[in-house]
Image (cartoon, rainbow, N blue to C red; front, side, top):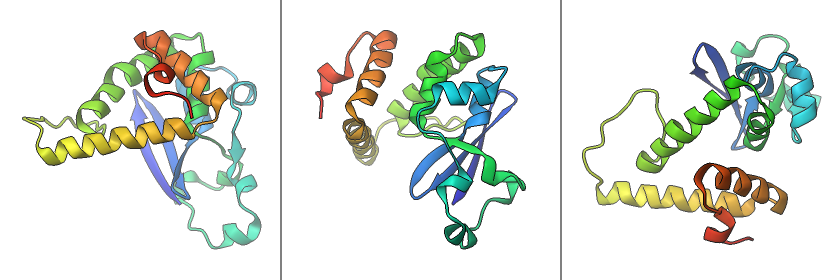
Length: 177
């Protein structure tokens, strides 16, 4: 288990890597989006939230090295996958959600498309080398594979979001499972 900490404006965004998957601390995301009752927002909008304590039985927890940064109540933290982050963004009518959505769609995603990663520290890309092009293609294949692994409801939700923002359908472009 690994803790990754990022920042958006003055807010912490903590991500926990478990079993090769990324899970966001739900309260961090709900706070950033300006929900006044973060627990209610998580209950109403997140389909796949779970607490760390629910995920592991006591035998499994004994052998894990939990990040000390999480404090003593880490077992009660609600975690959400990326799909629930998007649900919180999409359901929010608050200005904070629009700022996050703009940041993701106008800064983060274009940077990932251009360079294959996103970093707070900007790196100048002079030209694409064959290796860089291969890495970008591999990243695109990984993204397409992850899209195709989503269940149909998640594909439609992501497709609708993408179509509303970019005017094109991912399902029409890449097809269904």
